[in-house]
Image (cartoon, rainbow, N blue to C red; front, top):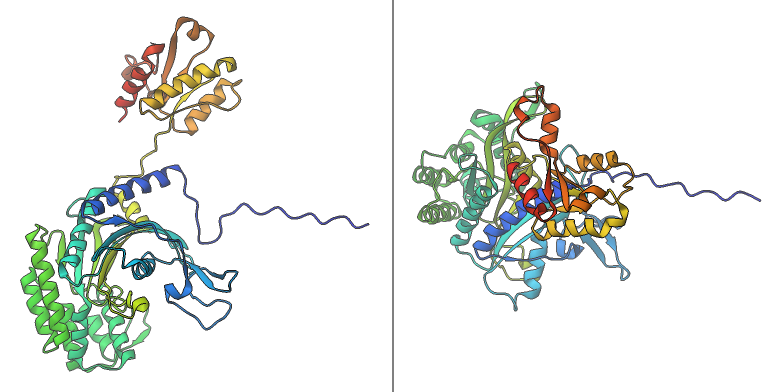
Length: 490
């Protein structure tokens, strides 16, 4: 008789492109999102928690391949053979929610949402298949006051979480202005227009001279390879270059340069008018160019947005993996998308929103020292006598009711050294010790673990001689004694 084949044990590994988040990662992210939510709430936005699963039709991205009908998302068929997918952002679900519940929602509808999204894309360094987004959107108004408000709210949110003024800038542009520039070039072929947009997006990397070459016949890149150009004439390239170099010393000069760049294009002039209105509304609220600027170099997502677009860039320097200084870069972006809800309703519904890259912003806060310090663990009440577990639980209960994070050691209490090792691994600031003698005398030993670690690291005990790391306190003074020690290490 053949031996039964053993089922192999599964490998304990995180799937490719995903990661696990532990204590401080989770608590720091939650605290950052709490602060951002406070800003959004202050602006009158309501929270929305939509389903993590949408129909493929609602997401609106398709492939003819039957086995994988939706590129870029995780999709499957349910029991009714209907294709479902994990959401890839928080905007597509908003469009579905608004279209479905619009008769019950106020107009305009202002909502914010925070949560994970999933992208079925090739992972890479810093690029994961699951990540957090933090969005705020206004649906149902074409007023530029909504766009200006989103920009102001984004600036306030960055400052609220700890990005100082001067370390960020919110840059604003308009898709209509770029459409006007394309009209001014006389380029009508969609493929050539797309090539012009891609070239404009390289302005930060190759500069004005490089863009001029790429708009024309082409150029040699740094490696010596030749890159074919778009094929515009010198005359056709003039409006594009005027557009890219139009940022002036103040909004008035920038807007004047943009009017020159779009020429007689009505679409372009409408876009400049919108930017002028946004700048005026922001100025009235006290948001100057030190926080929010009109910047024609912003070209993010211009195939998706229909009007103003904006991007929050962090301007302070960090060192890359090779030790070279570089700016941190973008942590948020958004704009006006007036066509998205129309997919469901058949009628255009104006909308504008912003999305913050949660992981990037959290990384920026750690770079600035605003987050990422060693997380403080709970006060640990050690166990010297198992028969007195109820009394140890009474101690921890008093600490918790006083707002102090605390726990009783629940492992094997025979080896006291293991209890202290546990407290060390937990990052505990204080350990409470009480055995038969302490219970008899109605006292506790309170050990300052942070001070003890500093004494252990010090070459001399001279500076610590007046501050013992362990003190005896009356049992009724447990909470006050612990609170005093914690206050010294804030």
